[in-house]
Each structure stands twice: as structure tokens, then as C-alpha cells.
Length: 330
Image (cartoon, rainbow, N blue to C red; front, side, top):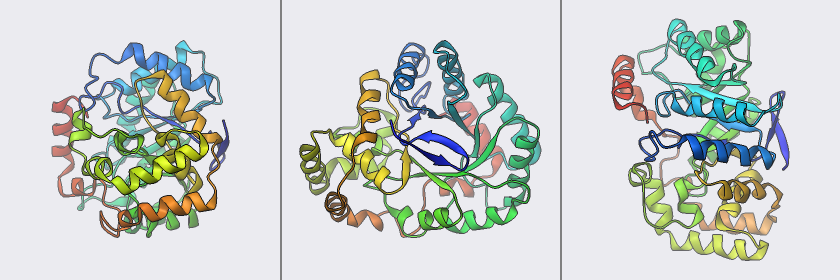
């Protein structure tokens, strides 16, 4: 496994996302404990030390399972846990309350505390910044991160931080969703933020999956586009054959070559081994260019600016909270 930096933190260039653990959208509510233990154990064996979760994944179930799996495996201090408080947390009080719950479920303070999506349009960005800073000052987390903030709002909230600086920005980013390359990723790099890529395989489409099997896949237009894009699939296959690799490994290696850290999720230990080995693939410039050319239309297909989860900004915080709580998380 190769390693890189998120601020002062040493992290593996491939992480593991735990959205699937306990998620209704992935069909794993109430059935995740056994495979979560095996998947996290295998990831640790492969040198993966970055684990990402969130309070809304199964309404805390993902955090609980991750904490249990890390303790069962005897994980050391070098393991980096990143979690996220919901974007409906917009004040110091609500953020601190959420983080205390995360610490309890994880059994440890998270290394990176992220705000999951920008607050509703009538909320103040600086309130969010104050809450995140205070969580670190109170020892409830070690570092701050942001998630799904478009360029304009990222610039706005960065202006609000006075005592601490975020170390990371987590965004949707893959070969079939390249809007972040236009403004957001360059801005993040200029401001010293490491980029974490969620859905790096477009929920399996870039691994070769052609038919949606879960609610998360059925509701994702990026999955639908990527699974049907013959030009992109052929480019992945061509490069994969050249390196004796899988499509998934090539798609992850492309993200690494772009300077971001992919956090794929899976329920199968053998997939963890496959994904981890993507860290050893060094794509040539010509192969990166080939994949860039095959996916050029995705620079603007979903808009010039980053839009993931931005529709949530139109819904007041209490309604967001109630909807997600009533659904038992996502």
C-alpha cells in the first residue's frame, strides 16, 4: 500500500467507505455485522488505514459497526477514522451533540470530523465553522473536513475558520462525474485541502456492473450513464488488459493519478484486496489521457459546477432531520 497526506495525517492512497454498512439504500439494514467485520479486517491486512463513515449511514449503524470492527481487529493508532455530521447540523449546539453521539458509537474521537453537505440557504456558514472548531477544541475530534461543498460555498466557509483549518474535502468524483475538475478541485488544492473521492466506481458501474441491483444504484443517474457508456467501458477494458488489472482497479488508479483519494465501499473481502492493489498501478500519461478523452463529456454532463446534494439546501434543517430520522438513515 502507498500512502499520502491529508494535512498532517498519513493515509493510504485507497481508503474504505462504510456507507453500505447498515444502509437501507444498499439493502444491508440489520445484516451487516458479519461482513463488516471481515471487510474491515481484510482492509487492515492490506494496509488500508483510512475509513470513512457518517452519522446518517443506517442512522449510526455504520459508525457502530466500524468501531466494533476496528476493536475486534486490534487496530492501532495509525488508523484514521473520518466521519460526517449531517448538513442539517447548522449550529454549535447541534454539531457538538452529533459528534458526542459519533464518539460513543465509534468508541473513539474521529480523526477527521466532516460536515456532510452545505447547510440550508438561510443558515450561516460561519455557525457551522464555529461548531466544527469547538468540537476539536473540546477533544471530540482531531481535525476538520468538509464534504460536498461547491466552490462558492467552500470559499465562503473557509473564510469563517479562525482557529483551525480543514484538512480535507470529500466530494463525488469519478470518471463519469468530472464536474469537480472545473473549479472545485483546483480550489481545494490551492487552499491545501486533500480531496477524498466518494463513489469512485460510480456505485459499481466503472467496475463493469451493467444492471442496478440496489436502491442506491437505481436512484443514481451517474450509475445509469456509466453502465451504458460503451466508449468509456471499452477504454477501461483496454487499459485494464495492458496492466493485467480489473476495470475497478484502473478506475481507482485514475483517481489516484488525479491527486485524489478514492474510498470505495464493498461487502466482500475479496473486493477489498482488489481495490487495495490499485495503489500499485502507475498509469502512464498516455493511458490517463486515453481515459480522459473517453470521459470528456462528463466534465460538463452534470453541470460545470459541483451539484451533488445541493438540492438539500432548499429544505429546512428540521425537515431534513425528521425525514432522515424517520427513514432510519440512508
